[in-house]
Image 1 (spheres, rainbow, N blue to C red):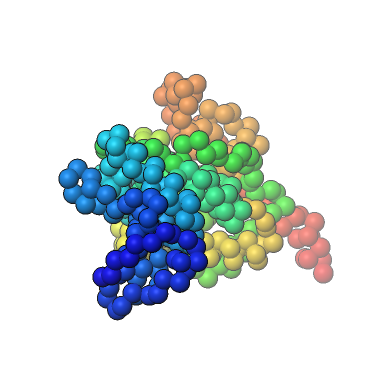
Image 2 (cartoon, helix red, strand yellow):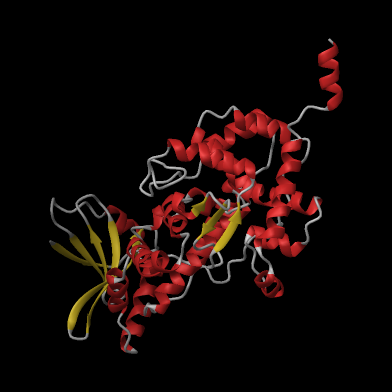
Length: 395
């Protein structure tokens, strides 16, 4: 280590040679007491304030030269000395950040203490954060600011859609809120970031799309995915519940499926129309798994069949349809066949303050009748027209 004292000028500092291997050279400014430039063996030059703080010598990093000018380095050194005189310790604040948990550590704590304990959809937290926020894992959480969250939200919205971006923003906000609840003395960088305006979807399978959809579904080579999609349409159940359907929850005698816990936290009994019973009966004879739709993943049951769904839509020539829209499809055909909103809500497991009292008085019979009518109408679009049959016979 070699020490030099000189009046800092740009020309003089640019001429400062690299330090010897494994060492650093220090240059002290004649004008601003305590301002130092350190030079490494690779030629990196950094400004520091060298001063005793609380009785111990400290080097407070001010910035890299020439990224920060000599004049700005002198101003930064003077400001840091003023902070020290007023009782602040810049190094203590930096050490707190250095010792603070990383985003990866916070997310692990969030999953174990909150998400897996309180959320049935915790697997989505795990998947989405690992997919979109893994670049934050090594970052200290106080170094993630609002402007960065805003940029990420805009980027995800452009590349992955508004809904995906908004759901990720909600997850970021929840994770940092939990950090604050657990004693972190920082601010939530997602607070104040505005969500994209979302349109409520009204998409469902139209009558002219049903024949093409059923044909493409029948041609799907993945049998588990094919049957899962059909059961989703026939029951109107949520995707997560249908994927995790178990044989022990199906009553073949009364043709019902009991979901122990739905999204709203309550149990639901779902009527199984004859088309669904035919699929489930065939699968039951061939199954050795506790799951109706077994899969190779860690859950033991089928994961989201995105590839099969994409193949079906391409073959059917159908655009802008999601698996969740099958749920809306059943409700739409129930409405078309005369069911009122309360019966549709009960069959789909909706929950609202207005309808809770009505649901409590409804038994499954009107729901069963409504679902049967709706599914019969949907499957009716698969039948050939009478005129076509007569023409084929005469020919």
